[in-house]
Image (cartoon, rainbow, N blue to C red; front, side, top):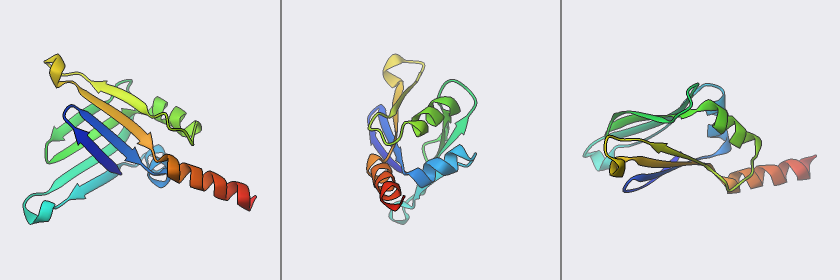
Length: 118
């Protein structure tokens, strides 16, 4: 999993193996020990709700995405179109925009390999 972060916008990108793990009920994680100064841990999982949620603290958080749109995205691969979620906040300027993508290059390589092999 890769996380790009700029202000109130996050882009979460996973590969197809991580997507399969999510779809099977697992969670995808990333962590950094930040040169021994502090530890960061993030996780993404699916849930049965309709909205994306974010729980935890800055150093240890979990982003829960709605299952249905992620499964629909999986059925459209490879595609450059990701999913967009807005996590509301008490103040509108604190809302978090989340884009969730599956690595298109990974999907395209797998599709090409399956066509050449079959």
